[in-house]
Image (cartoon, rainbow, N blue to C red):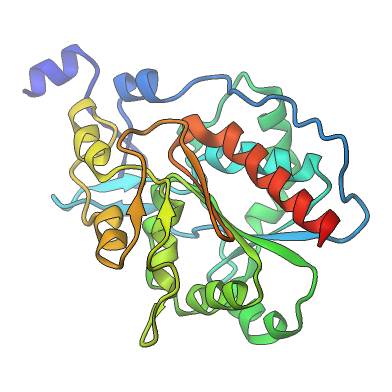
Length: 288
């Protein structure tokens, strides 16, 4: 098996910090130097109206797989970047937080090197990603009086499964947004972070339909060396146990709106998810 992996370049790539990034084969099959970003043109926008989106990112880099090996992960730059481009084009301001204010981790190996719009975005946001705000401090000091936020945004990447699903502050934030009728956006593995909203009173998303990256596809990815082992847990399974229906079976371009929750299935959905989110938030902001 190791010989075949080497032959087909399907062995995960060791990183300098003792983890693994995807194999050359996995990168060829699952990433691209360009994206499907459509330019983000909107006839109307909310520029200058201080309509804000709070983007909650992971500050953790390594996922320990079922076999004990570590996967070098973070937030996926396409799943994060394309929706950001659409939101910014529609005039929304984006604030970045991580649980404690540590730097937001990005899956640099998935960065689309030939996409000028995404490259420019990450250059512009580099200071905010390196020194984001603290979610803990926001919840403690600012959340109760915050009036300018129209959405909470949970970008994708396996890093969304690290720390966020059990983060008490995120749970408070999601319940606050739910109570205030604020939109929540989550793409690919981002819906895993919604698990933080479960408390003794129940799960605020019970009975919801969502698009999300399928557990069944995550189970297959070690075969091409995308990850160095199988997943330590299945977030789709946990959401389903809490009464969620995941509507897609494939890692495709599926997007879905259920009440004030907007979800997308995979990197293939990033552009459509971004446009759906921006259009929905514009309509709500301009008519609400």
